Image 1 (spheres, rainbow, N blue to C red):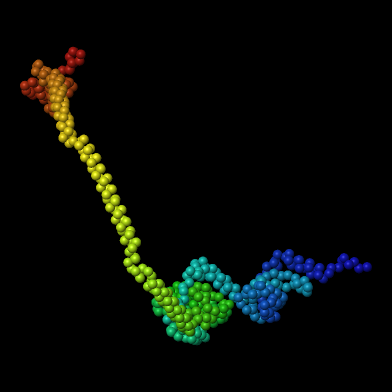
Image 2 (image 1 turned 45 degrees about the vertical axis):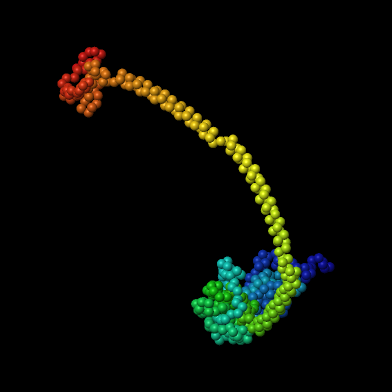
Length: 456
């Protein structure tokens, strides 16, 4: 008898294998390269195709949400880089690759270079809106930098001449593809810049193409030259889905050369129509203003004040009379007040007679003079007594008084007083001072005494 519990269902087996895939960390994020096979573009749908190399092939599914983010159009036989994960499709029991990103093989490094340069220039602020210059409304001269043999210059000239024939268009030919394209584009822009304010706006562009074809407009030298232009620059590079760094740094971006010409020029017919409308509105506004002024004038003509001009001054005359009366009353009151003040001052002046004041001052002066003389006499007398006492003291201690009693004092040749034999030397000349003169002597012998005893 067969045991049903031993046998698995197909769904269980597929589920088990699916879990194995999901639990394998190496299959969560896989990077593949290969050639597109069986690719048939499906509008607004998921894409189903194969990826193969020389020996193998794997089925690939790319959901619509991921496919719409691609910046290029995949084609049969194109070599691509894809990333995603591997899983099992249960209903068919087959494993397949679920792609999340895709880019052309050989362009990955180029895309990375573009991304890094874009981040660098964005940090410097080259793409900021505040640096964008305004496109002039009525340009006189337009400079175009593009290929002389392409359709871009033709579309621009046809559109500009149709919309605004007044504008003069000058072509500055440049290569728009290849290794030398970036240098020729920069040279053309620098030549335009050297013209000063000759041109009002610059259009730079070319038709559509691959990333390699549009690469000159991603070169750093081209982007920086566009940023340095003193006049506004309109970029028209590639198709609407193509975005280059020249588009980001330009003051305006147009999807096509025709749109660029429309950005740069006004539609003359629309301008003329607008002028006619504005003229009509201005005429109507002037007429309405004149009508309003006429109404105001009519009201003023019929105003009572203009009918009887003297009524203008009735209130003013009455006010002048009232103010005159108030002024006279105020003057009279002030005079009365000042008269009372004057009489009061006169009474106070009589009470403070100058002659009486002078007599009092004279008595005070005489008293001060008498007191001053008495004080000075007492002071002089006191100073004389002090002088006499000082003279007596000086006389008492005067050496001359001592000398008059027969004493003398001795000095050396330098005039120093000699007070001890220790100051003397043999043969030294000395002076003896008497009360009535001086005598010069010579030291012949020195004898010292101590406590009345003679010493040699």
